[in-house]
Amino acid sequence: MTAQYDFTLGKSESFDRPLTWYGGDGNVIDLTGMTAVMTIKDDESDAVVVLTSEAGITLGGEAGTIELSITPVQSAELDFITGRYDLMIYKASSNYAKRLIDGTVTLARGSTS
Image (cartoon, rainbow, N blue to C red; front, side, top):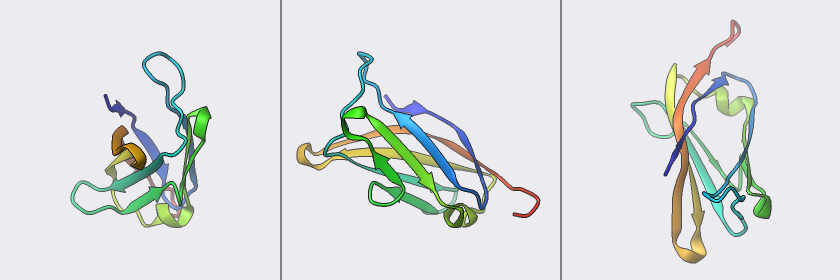
């Protein structure tokens, strides 16, 4: 089952969010050999920001950790009030794909944004 997680992202700000994936038995899921893709978009367009395990997502192998990082340049490109995102996990060797989390992204605009 996909977990729902909503968050707020500051326009033109860094965003770093650590996550840990736990299985139904309460043990962490080993992410060794897996890749990840996170897509953020508004409700009416194609992807605005795409993070991958090559750029913006760090997978922690046996520890089951996932670190999401969005740069100020990437968040400056966003131009919506509320958008959507999902985080997909893939394991190519077994043709495995799972939508781990999804939800809404609220863009917070400061007085200088």
